[in-house]
Amino acid sequence: MRGRQVLMQTLVNHGVERIFGNPGTTESPLLDSLLDYPSLQYVVHLHEGVAVGAANFYAQASGKTAFVNLHVAPGLGNAIGMIYGALKANSPMVVTAGQQDTRLRLRDPVLGHDLAAMAAPVTKWSVQVERADELGPILQRAFKIANEAPAGPVFVALPIDVMEQETAIPPGKPATLYEASQPSPQALAALADHLRAANSPAIVAGDDVARCGAVSMLVDLAEKLGAGVWFEGLRGRNSFPTDHPSYRGTLAFDAAGIAKQFAGNDLVLMVGGPFFEEVWYAPGSPFPVGCKVLQIEAAPRRLAYNFAVDVGVLADVGETLGALDEELAQVEGAAKRNEALKARKEADEAAQKARVEKAWLRSPTSMARCMAEIKAGAPNDVVVVDETITANLDLFKTFTFQGPADYYSGRGGGIGQGVAGALGVAVADPKRPILCVSGDGSSMYSIQALWTAAHHDLPIVFVILANREYRVLKHNIDAYRARFEVKSNKPYAHMDLTGPVLGFVDLAKGMGIAGIRVTQADDIQKAVAAAFASGKPHLIEIEIEGKR
Image 1 (cartoon, rainbow, N blue to C red):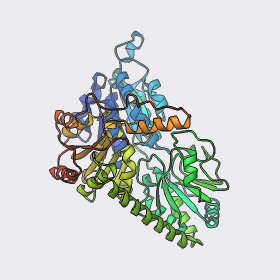
Image 2: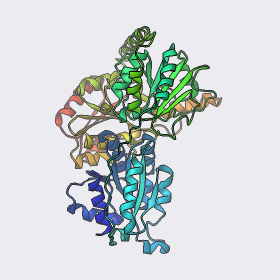
Image 3: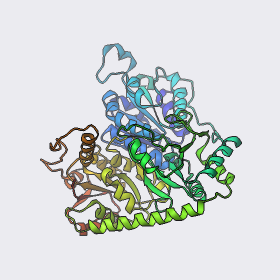
Image 4: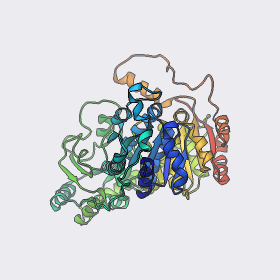
């Protein structure tokens, strides 16, 4: 069989249902083969970065390995930022790109470049197939590596002539692997001893808790310990119910800020994540002096990577949480701590209610009221794809997220992931309503996603929060000036999205999506409800307040 047939049959064998791609000349063998493999749906995008962003969130929402096909060197270059986001999100993904005919290698052809070298810094493994006999084995290895903890993208370059070569080596197929490792009895005993001895434990829930379906186990453990549960500053999934009394919120982006949040804790248990992704340097440890640090992690590279830990356990996160819950019968002081957490939660909710009321009549609309109105107009079972950035605090204090499938966001800090990622979530979970909330600046990095939503009739409601500025950058330049003692009263240079003002309703119309611009807070709820009722992709541009 030919190389292209090996590729397509390998995808079928591995349960791939969708190819996220942007077509180009060197991808002709794959595109021309699609009609022969009707089980493979091609999701077409107008930019390679959007294709990868959609595939990243699809992998998270579906639990499957995403497959991406990009155009040669410039196309791969367009996608590098989004591949980086997938790497940070630990999304299992096989990214491919067509490559020029290998017989042209010494002639410096149009679009020619070393694709494997380009992709290597942002992938777990990067390789070019040199002959058709390698195609089956390389793809088999690619799917394996993409799924090994911590999961992430791999890259395979596919030269057009190799795709047309004959080979007798068949396509690979997935093995039945039982990889969930049990924690050792000694490890469980050590964890349990430290947890019983703690007077004020805290837990940091990484994305892997959601990824392995262990949210309910973490809830049981938190309640048994009387421990508050934090998310990292950047998180892609919802690993703990946000309306639970033990939920504390998100951690800061520097060691000093995190240490302040942990100031009352004598033990911190970190579960299933990189811990911690900081934005600003601050001296010292994120943990208070004398605080015990425990870690549960499935990936050897992550365990005790950034911090010395008192106990580190290398095992499946879900298996360890479940076994630990059984190991701990009753924990002294937990009931009293749970009461204190409940009281704190009620105080936080009252404070947010007062904050919303205080900002209720502001014009343009405050972020606090905007989130309240959006929630009021959205269906109860809505899935939120979030790239709100500076409005994120209000979003999390307004919406309630119970399980892993309720919330998705980007990791790594690169913007534009939300609007692109919503496509992947909608493809993976077509039965639930999808709400994508994005800042205006972020959305412009992948605005072509609107065309894909229209083309494939994905009924996503895109809400663009238009404050006409890169608000987060204004906050960050304030922080920069303070941290580096830069005395300045200069204005914010090049951070306003005016002159001209972006017209998102016009942009949506040009890509086949109906839209509406809302300038009054009283109209938000009705606009959101009508958008969902339409059953079609829809865009709502909401004018909100800028930096005060």
